[in-house]
Amino acid sequence: MVDDEIKEYPKFKQSMVKTHTILIPSMLDIHMELMEAVLLQRGYKCEIMRNQGPEVVEEGLKYVHNDTCYPALLVIGQFIDNLNHRDDTHNVVLLITQTGGGCRASNYLHLLRKALVKAGYGYIPVVSLNASNLEKDSGFKPTLTDLLKLVAAITYGDELMYLFNKCRSYEKTKGVATTLKDSWIKKITDQFAEGKGTKLSQVKKNLNDMAKDFDNLDLDLSHKKPKVGIVGEIYIKYASLGNNHLEDFLVSQDAEVMVPGLYGFALYTIWNSIYDREIYGRSLKSAIVAKFLLRFLRRREKAMIESMNNTKFTPMNYFDHTKDLSEGVLHHGTKMGEGWLLTAEMMELIEEGYENIVCAQPFGCLPNHICGKGVMKKIKSIHKDANIVAIDYDPSATKVNQENRIKLMLAIARERIKDEEKAEL
Ligand code: SF4
Image 1 (cartoon, helix red, strand yellow):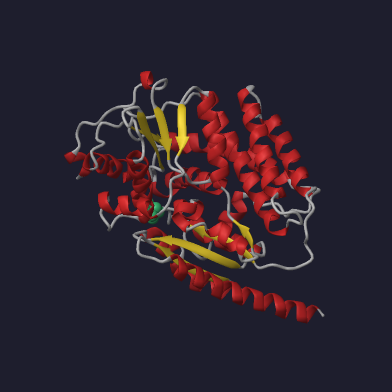
Image 2 (cartoon, rainbow, N blue to C red):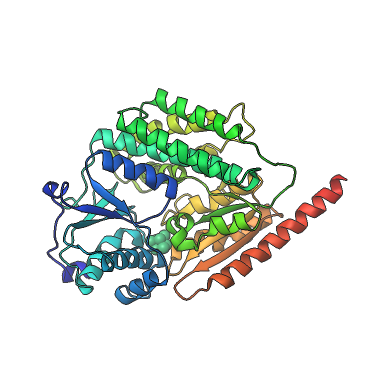
């Protein structure tokens, strides 16, 4: 429908690289900082949008139908709010990522173009970054070196996010984990600038050194804290704009937070191509490429897990183990949005001791209501201690209401810790 209305749209041309600033929606803070560095070093002028506040939602509501998924409304609202506050909107390009699956995320690009026209910014080109060959004529064309750097950025981002979350709630001196995380972001971006940090041997060394540095932080582990995992739709799970700064809120409530990394989603998307071939007879070529990519990423996943050896941190699980955990709860053919991965991540978190879980659900998201809320009863029948709360995120949901529900979940978690301690005594 939208395509019919906008047949012609401005294209991103290579000549714009030097003159235009690429605006990128914010999501995973650590990963995005590393990716921003990769693009800057490549000669692109780019900017991660950090504008937040009620205006973003208001702009989203103005230009996107209120039936649309909440993440789309926020991303588009953030773009338009950012453009409204710029002096020069003729030298910007908007970058949007697309998963390319059957979910509505594949339509965000068209929704954005339609909103831009309505808001009077129809002359601004939109660049699509996707793995599915969508938008062939307006796609961003990364080189092999760019791709290697982007994969390395995701690897380092996942490891840093994991270690940072493991330490930030137990610091003896406030801020040391943040300082260490920032110093590692700088170290990695410097290496990227020198053309280093992407080979497997270099990745392994950096990951080992990161784990050692975080292991040496002076932490107060004398008191048990509620361990809370965050799962949900990818944008709402990771973007502080989408989840009202959920991670910071949980830390402020004296909880330890765990957010499953981006590797899980990447491997899930790739593995699904192989499974599609197996159960639906889909493209053989995609399945072969997927097998190659899977092998490539698994070697880096192994390096991440092995970097935790000889430290106090429990390593994360291999993707294959996580995948198997959802068996018997949700079929692996359920793969719209986060699909079976959402279920598997909940099972994995419980297995790792994070039985308190916030399932972040955006308004308008059918897949997440099925694979999140829809499986909670089954998960609780397997793990009696599972303390899962589904929190809805939509334009009318109030932060107070969301936080009160999370506080209730934390109260249950604290009661359980007290009971455990009494039993130990
Ligand atoms: S996962 Fe849910 S919120 Fe995200 S695009 Fe799909 S339907 Fe929308």
